[in-house]
Length: 395
Ligand code: AMP
Ligand code: MG
Image (cartoon, rainbow, N blue to C red; front, top):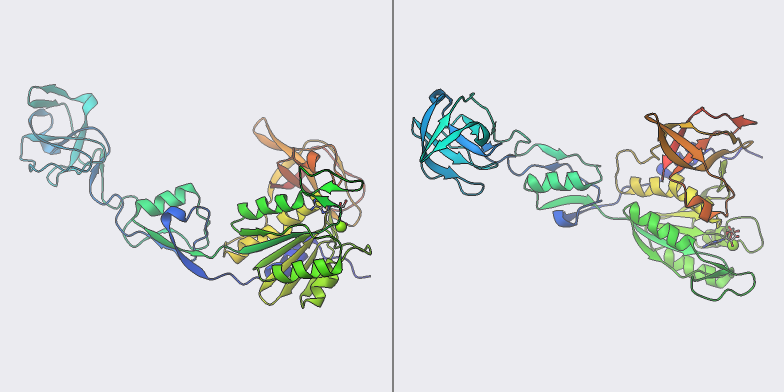
């Protein structure tokens, strides 16, 4: 039997089949967490005019030291109308227009005001004056294409005058949990039944990855019901199923997908948990068949589905952002499969340690809920020792 693809090989197989979605214009007020389809450029210089960095007095530096007549006030949004004649000063507030003739602002803290005069001990040319365009020039790139807009990026674009930005359309993701045993939380459980949790898990994961979700009700392990649900869900950009991809007689997802014309790219990856994960395409729809065990679904999403959603949105680096850490206690390796071990991060003397949690079986979603990291434990025999350098994926 051919060896199973590694995590990286499976991921490359997925990314090779992703075509970024089209762009749409989005008001800046709705652009948070969206990905820019084109560079976002500045409409205006920022600051748009020479402005004061301090509350104080705008002066001609050549007039200092000296006693200057206060000829007017320049407040934020309300420039002084009086010009700055030699021997005079204009009271000024932070962010207000610095009069053309002034080349310095003297902070209020170092002057003495006497009636309508101000005694200025010193003024250095250029001091406390923000030049126009010192943050960005009109026309220059504020945020590059392929960037997901976080709070500072949204603020930067707004400050530079962008009312709208071109963003990649959000991927539409259909989620279909499968399993006759699944009941909604709050229902009474009959013997053999469990509460459905993967639908909510995957919905939350998709939302944090920038997709919009249609969560279908769980379908039982029945051919007609499975086919009806999957047929409808295949209209989405991405279909994510949970359960029903193993080798049991009630695992109907893969064969139903094949009947519906989806072409399987791979089934099973050398990963623990989540080995029976399937990936298929139908037209432009990407289909992920995640295993039903909740931790397998969680891990499979992070390794394969989230990168695909990032790539669909044109994110420059869609792959999982593994980061280095030190393993706090030993873990057993898995023969033939790379493992993603649920762990908690902590800072010890300024270095990041990852502590594997107890309860690593793939059904233990409650144990996994204490984790903020998935530690990559490369396949092999024996143990990975405490103190080993590892890489981990923040979750
Ligand atoms: P399967 O992959 O269908 O063989 O399911 C593997 C295990 O995961 C079984 O114990 C299922 O009961 C459980 N499971 C499947 N789907 C879900 C779900 N949506 N929520 C919680 N557990 C599930
Ligand atoms: Mg099942």
